[in-house]
Image (cartoon, rainbow, N blue to C red; front, side, top):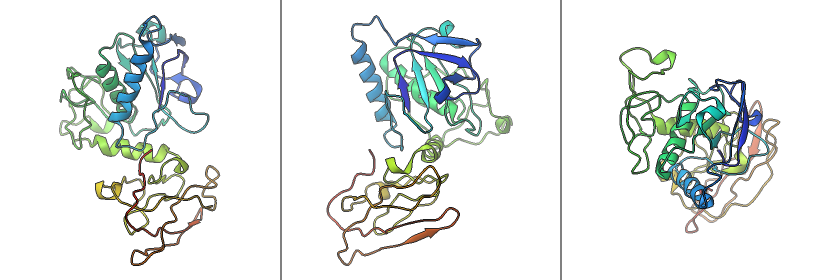
Length: 300
């Protein structure tokens, strides 16, 4: 996720962070100025926001950066200016509701007017969720409160992602399959996990499985794989293994030619080596041999 505080020109079109296009714009083109450019404590304000967003998303396989990624898919949130500068119908924050998450490179915008810092952080998390197809809720502490409904969010503390939480059936924007009065709850945590597991390159996260690339890069305690698109439960996240070392892997798709896989201690009785071979496209790598006591990091 790219947090852009340096000013950005945007054009109207299908949302695509790599092309600086946003579908929610009401004008053909607009430019967001640098975030709080006249604020003497601008750097401190930005650091507070970045650290807060990272902390609230730390449970997910998300890299939060203030430098635009050179390649791959990413979500961009542009900070700065007023709604008129970017052609937004909303004065505080905006993103396009993407039912089914059909556009992976979402572009959102947050105004200079949003304050305090915790409100900016909560708006950023809510903007991501709206772009993933999550709709508004009526829980003030939930991150989707206030996104196209009358909910007043509690910005005195970090917002929470419900797992599950009831949707607001009276929200102004709902996905087509959610227009009936008996709305099912939405699992916001699962939606974030699924979306970013698919987006993330397998070379950059030791346990994420990118089902689009067909590569498993996750390792349980004394086992070697997790299901496609599913995040590890807490017992897998807290496993202990020997440090990783790089080995070569056969190409899976044209997007991935190698990745880091754990090749761990061979000491008995913790041998659980598995060689996995997958078809179309084929991928093979060494199995994991886990042994205590050295912990291995499971998040960047």
